[in-house]
Image 1: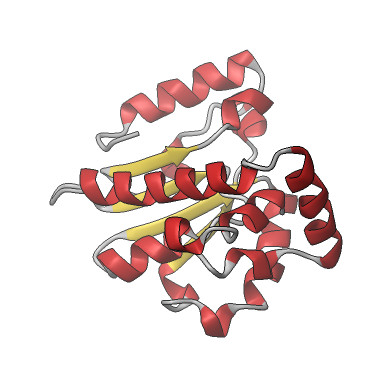
Image 2 (image 1 turned 120 degrees about the vertical axis):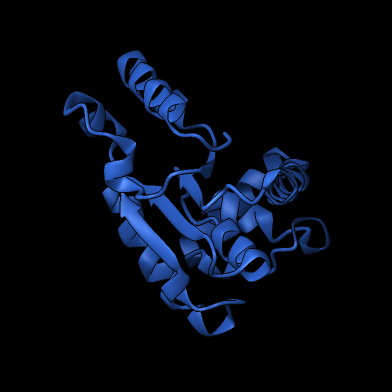
Length: 177
């Protein structure tokens, strides 16, 4: 929720004025405390958010058929991309099952304010540790052939073996990472 709060601190940079509304009152208070300790946090997150949006838009080509966010948390990037690219792509937001439940609840509170309908976005529960142990294919979770994948910080939180599995699976995709 801290990152969602920070993304809305500089909406003229992040192009995201809705993320703060995804935060609970407790999450907002915690983010405000965090902002006092890290006064440039909001600027950093807003710049990073804008960078991801512009990078995906710049890299997209006629072969790409999907956008995949691994570890999306409360990010609204898929909605921003769907508004600009349209229904010719598939959009996948994924995270741990408990985060997906929190995400669905939070997004339902702002559904009428989103730039596009939720029907374009597929939300997928993905536990990388479990998927690696089962040696699943990423295409089991994301049925597409040439996606652009955004994965932010996920590798910090999973075992080295799971990172190796994820890197191997990502290398099998013909899109961009």
